[in-house]
Length: 225
Image 1 (cartoon, helix red, strand yellow):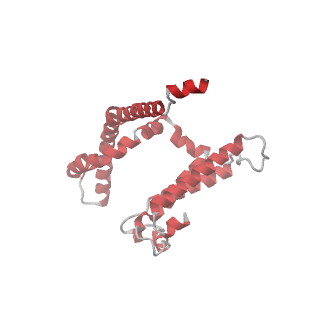
Image 2: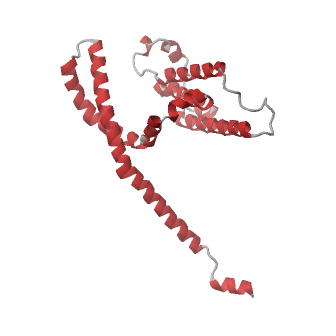
């Protein structure tokens, strides 16, 4: 991780960070389930203090994840945070968002209270369509959202900052509904059939590979002799 940070490979840094967090989570679960270790080695019991701590870390991750790309000097605290970014980092507007993502995952994996946010049916459904949403969101933004925003501006106005924010919220709400619907349709018509086809093809290839590795009949007969 230190090498990836110094080399400014933020994608590799997040990969190794996620790998480390996953390993820690597996080890923590194994230690908690094992009865051969002492209580000092087991994971800490949930308490109000730990819940508050992980909640604060989670909020900090959200704050870092909202790193502004422009006019950061007007955002509270970002003047200092921007100055802390090492000089060898070229993609500076992605720096703190990466650390924020790691804090979000780490705090959530340690807090049963925070895990409830992602364990309900609605959040699980969003996770189910997340890949489809990732694929179609750009298309929806460049078609529906950019076409809808001027219409909303004509209705609510765009002269003041408040009017722009209201128009943005209304347009975002409308587009979000259609985005979820299109993602669901894409998942059912494209994503799920593609996964089924890939599994079918994998099964055929694996079966063919096994058949080619079987011993010839003459070898089996000679072995019996």
